[in-house]
Length: 357
Image 1: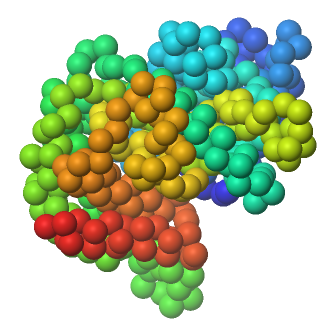
Image 2: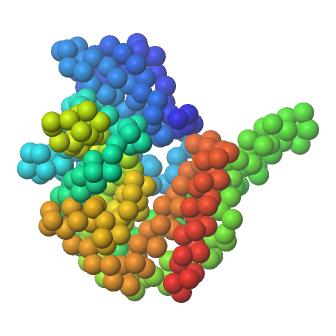
Image 3: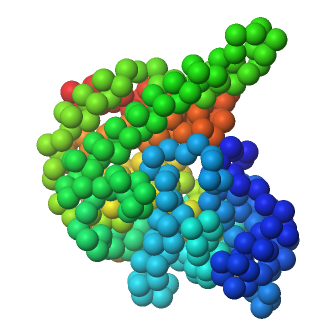
């Protein structure tokens, strides 16, 4: 996926960056193009280890407020995951990190979305159950300072309680949307000969199709149910199948059981309500009370009680993800079908919350 936030380096420049910052060089084997935000390269380090290098966006790239310092967030999450017992949460090992990059070990397996269509239902069920268990173990991690919100200090989007932090997270996205619209207005050319530039600037508006005041009102109405969350837990918030690697011998019918080999892309993580995890998990299948995922989650010690208050919070988190998806289309340059999908996602979340109201 192409994105304006991807920083592309030549093999020589990438090698020089690692040598200067991590004390080890690399040989680039290939660019990994599936990512949506950060450029990534498959490399071989000087000591022979295969690795993946993820690069932070260029310093002048337009990023959202929560994305400021996002590489530090990912490095922090890897550090916290390393404190779990071995095998509890499969993920790459963080080999090196710096303000501009993380260097990770290479995972076995294949992204789930690449093989999902060929998996029999019994295999999908087993993997969803395992994913639920893995997620429950992730949610045992709590914020060391007791604060909710995004951990990167550059983001300044945290608070001592969840309603305040979540409201700040929503407000930041609305401010990002307003900034994108202002920038697009400023770039509209007067000369008809550069109409293509005007169209591109208009795309960067990331239109919400709903007034910001409506979104703020819906969040304000949910402060009571948000206040039920009293302990900040680590939430990945991007557990769609493309970020889950699986090993499925023989298409799920071989002698070895299918398994999850690793979960990647932790940069969207925040400290908050574990219920929010269900939003991205829903992109891979059912997350309802009787689902395989919830069964695995509860068997591993997680607690999910689908009360009216929990369902209200879940609707708020769908609103937040829909808002995030639409607003990020502007700086990343996403248009067409993807932008339309994001806008539908946001509109459906708004409609759901209005129905609850």
